[in-house]
Image (tube, rainbow, N blue to C red; front, top):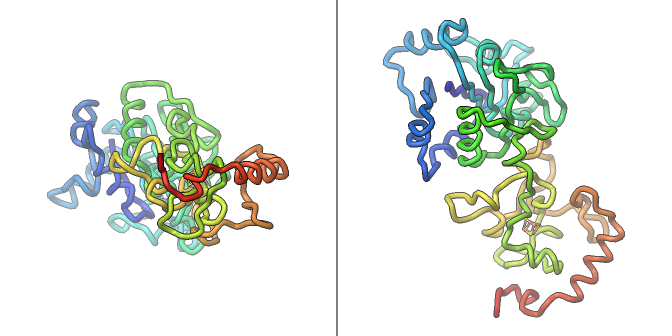
Length: 309
Ligand code: SF4
């Protein structure tokens, strides 16, 4: 496996280093996965050594089973890619050369998947096979890795380490990966962040927070995107114990192709008190009627924002 960092903050690498049970090195050992290069874990004694490795992989002389790309592919200025280089060579050219040889290509994080934070026009950044929600991206919609799969997208800002570990395990063991319309494994992204949130009961009765530090739901006023965001944050807990919504921070929908969106993260955009965005397939008038009745039926213990028994 070769890990290439492009237009990124290293957040996905830092997240991966937090993998526990197994930890990252145990994972590599359990899978018998040879790590050819990772910028945070590998050391080239000489620059020449790293260059030779890259050349042998790009030429096909040395086989490359899995290419992980972290960060957006930077094409600026003017399509040259010279804003992001490795030894004076645009990394976009390396991505193209290595992707052509790889058995599987994995986009680690939202920037690599869709452009994300680094997908702005200033640096001409884009995702590997998507630009925002549009199929194509840097490699083109028709791209298939040597093993037959398109780019496997693992969005998240950062992506949870267990999602990377589970995807690598599936690829190494040859377990078939079913991908959704955004090319993410359905067994990891086939649920919403809302599922498993400990504030669900408050959501049900429309007991809402208007400020931080309470225990209500964050949907109506505080900007929570949990019901609309694909993701397993409340299934694979962060540091094995928590998630943003569990500690009272709204979900920013960092797995969505349009992340980050150009409006405040901590405020719900609403029309007459009803959030502008509702979960897929919801009928607005029915939802409003249901929420009004649910709020009227809310138990006192929830209205007091307590879990009281
Ligand atoms: S805080 Fe967000 S994720 Fe949790 S129940 Fe409310 S809407 Fe759902």
